[in-house]
Length: 323
Image (tube, rainbow, N blue to C red; front, side):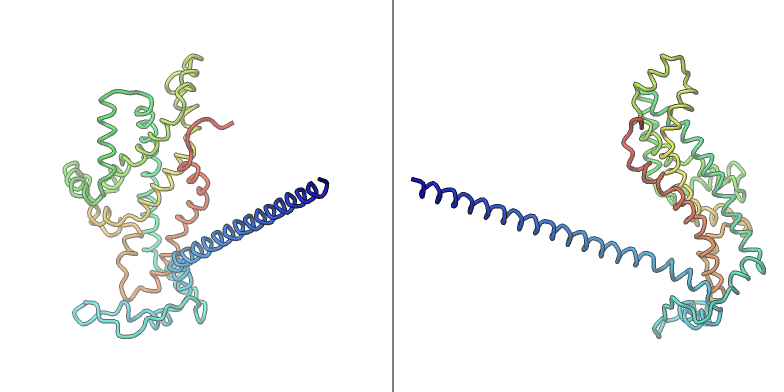
């Protein structure tokens, strides 16, 4: 009996040991597979990150090249024939990331010798700044009304906002031109400002965000004697800080890079923003285009880097009040 019991215990111990070994092996395989997936995802993400960053890096580094070096590397890309048309590129284009000799001549020309580029830069600021500020002001008030009150009329108007938002700007460009001509606003900044200020994008974004705020919070404020303005200013606006920053960043990016609106609505080239110049690069200004594009990227990069946390918070926030 004792020998049988000992043999049984030995067999049970062997089974447990085998199970523990199998469990350790299975856990090791899972960790190895998980590490492999993370490494593979990291490599793929790094590849696409490098791929997407290459044009930016190329633009920045090439802006420090001399005009002769840029012409030698990219002159064939922008060459034209006697009739002004593009020619066939018979030779390989040399994409060069490191200049042979660092030169600041392009920046000196842009910043000091040719004030037209700085004028166009400030045109971009003048066109974009009021649109961002007043579109957020109009959208915050309109979205509060859409989120606070219910009814069929509100649903119809909000649905119309969604339809307008889904339409690309090129579809509404002709109606905007006709309305601006009828109001006598053509060739003025108001022809760009008014459609931008009353754009439906921010209204849609902020309305969806405000609807996530618990109604019990607003009802408690009403019981305490708060009016609509106090609820809007002291409850909704602080809770919508992330959404406001997200909308501001997206609006700025959109109108900072606009091209069609100034070309159609502003016939005076002196009022055009810098984005229009960048869309009209010619063979004699390749080097300047690299320098101007680098300067033009700085505000967008600063706005994005400063508001990145707010942008993520505004997109991922699910409602409620933070403790």
